[in-house]
Length: 79
Image (cartoon, rainbow, N blue to C red; front, side, top):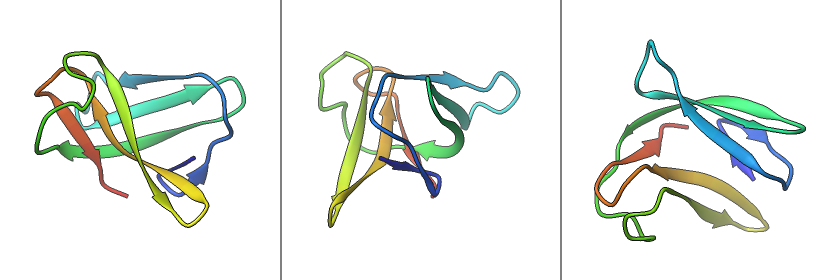
């Protein structure tokens, strides 16, 4: 999937909010990682009250779109 212009291979990833800049997240996996900048998202978490990531498909690529921490606390990527 794509995040912040970087291609990240399939695998397990963690997202961590930056302590100094709450709009910045680190996405880290076994083989790759990147930082992303976010803004508050509109709407509700499609997974209910569970943390989740949402993606959009562009042709044959997936792009990370939002990071949901709870049902109403979501962040949209700015890339």
